Each structure stands twice: as C-alpha cells, then as structure tokens.
Length: 327
Image (cartoon, rainbow, N blue to C red):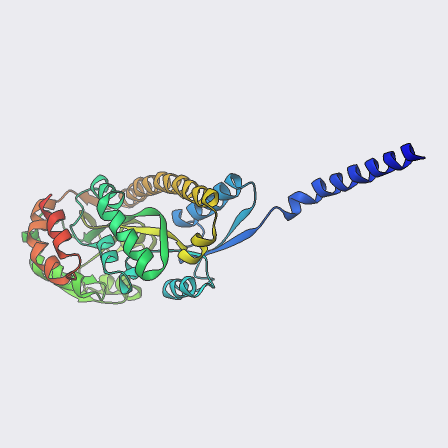
C-alpha cells in the first residue's frame, strides 16, 4: 500500500513538473517595450528597431519583447519624449529635439562641425558623446542606448557650385531654422525659409533656384525632375539616438541592462550597413536620372560659415564647437 501511494505521489509530481514545463514558454515573456518613431517601414531606423527587438528577445530568452510602432502611430516625437518622462512610453528615436531639455543635444546637428562620417563617429562614441548622453539622462530622464547616422545634407541647383563664391545670391529654400538662414546668408546665398511641401513647385516655377537636403529626400521628392546638380556640400552631418526611458532602465536587472546594451550595439551595426547601402543607392539612382554630382571645396565653405555657426549655437556648446572647427 505504501509503495502504491509513493508511486502515485511520484507520478503526480512528475505530471505537475511536465505541466509546468509545457506552460513555461507561454509565461516566459515578462516585459513588452513599446517603441514609437516617425519613420516608415522601409526606413533603416525602423528596420534597426525591429532588429533590436529580435536581438533583445534572443538575449533574454524571450523574457523581454519589443513592439515597434512606425509612422508616428504611437505619437509625434515630442509627445513620445513626454510620454517616456511620464512612464507611458518606453522607447523612441530622437535627436536634437532633446536640446529642449539637454542643451548639449544641439551638438547632434551643427553645420560643418564634422568633417566626415568617421569624424562624427569619433565624437558620438567618444568623450563628447558620453557627456551628451549623460546630460540627456540627467535632464530629460531618457537614456540613449545606440545612435544612427543621418544622411548628410547636400545643396541641389541647376549649375555647379564648387565654392562659396559660386553662390552669388543664389535663391534657395532652407528650413525655418535661424541657424540655417544665417549660415547660408553668410556663405553668400539668399536663403528663403519655406515648408518642405512647397519646395518642388517653387523650384519648378523659379521662385527659388536651389534647396538642400539629404540624398534620400532629394530622391523621394523627385527633385531630379527640377534640379540638375547635387553639390556635395555635406554641410550638416548628424546622428540620432535610439532611446529608452530612464525609469524603465532602472527597473531592469544588471543582466537585462547588459542584454539591452548588447542588443542596441547589434542594431546600431546593422543600421550602419543599411545606411551605407542607401547612400550609395540614392546617388546611383539620382545619377541615373541625369543629376551631376559635384565635389566642393568643403574647407572654404566651413571657414566662411564658422562665425555664423558660432553666433547661433548656445553658450553650453560653443567652446566644443570651436574645438571641432579647429580639428
């Protein structure tokens, strides 16, 4: 009788263990992070966000999942930042907008501060980058965990422009940003703030003669139909952060923080590959559509723009920008 009871207890215990093992995968997910951003599904930022989620899930054995919301479907950039501070949003992709809280975030997009992609990488991943991230954590309560390069801005026109002397009052559209207006005026152009939606028609009817944007936007807006040259001014090189709410970060164990950091590093490397492919593909596309790419005297542009740039940056970053110009 005792043997029968013992066997029955053993069988019941084994059955309970088996049921637990079967149920375990369904119960494994402990946290779902909501990541909202403004890009569409074809954008490298979105693809890198999805990759981040895949990597994080793998590194945590499915305990932490990431749900990605593109196309501002979770809210606009500032709304998402506010949501992260309030604890209603977990993640977003954001950049110089953070200067509303952390003045050093303005360094993410300063004209002529970065001479090449490699120079920008040195700053973003070095001591200055560490200071920017620390201030964002402290003052915005948002933690940058990876960064993505943005396509450099180039000047399009209907004639080659090699040096600032070639601008000679060129009527060009710029975003309604005082820094952009002042820099292009200092360079010798005639900058006109205008909504992006009006640029194609204004180029078509001759209201303006030029505009400046990254290659991806030049391509998607079909500016090749109304402009013949891409002058490689590369006047603004910038980056943007993949970020996590600091309140979420503080809830994670040291092990999970390490997993987030590693997943973010993998997503950053993946996005850089996509970024480099897209730059090459956009140039090939625009050349195929008849646009001529012009190498410019970058040093001459930077030297002439320097005073206007320094006059427009905030006091917190001016010494750093002066140092970057001197490098």
